[in-house]
Length: 203
Image 1 (cartoon, rainbow, N blue to C red):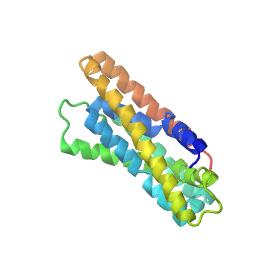
Image 2: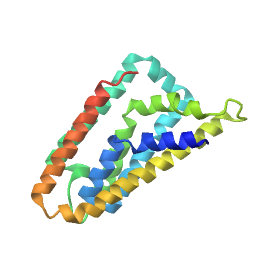
Image 3: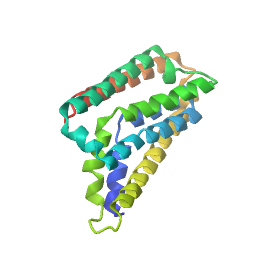
Image 4: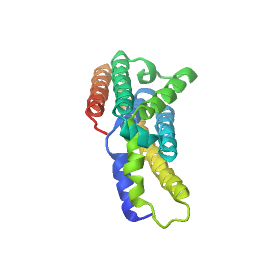
């Protein structure tokens, strides 16, 4: 793995996106433990895209405008639903002093779904990772798994750091209703903007 791969991967992972916003929002809304669950869920959501890339399904997604749009608009709808949930302070975005096991499950499900319904990730595994693969590698499949493993590990670490930092600020804002209301509106707007960006995404 070259230094260029590590740097590029970090830039891709650390750039503001659905997973980063979700991890930060969860850290503020539900605390450190939930933020780690959110980071783990977003990382798990990458696995189906990796499997699709390795089995050739991503090529079909890339080639079929209808299939790509179906996945894309399902993702847009989910992001808009998350924005609504955030404004209503429901689901994973609900602020509780003592999160319940059920709410933890909700954080996990929402995090997986957010990445699962993002077709850009499947395209990413086709367009990005092959650039860093050794054409003379004895086992290209194993090399792709290794690169993907690094990408997923970095995803979890970066999102976890985002979430834990947000959780550390939780006590400073949770006692201020006006600040919490502003943050909810800000995160809802972020989900809407991410949905709009996904809506105009081309294959």
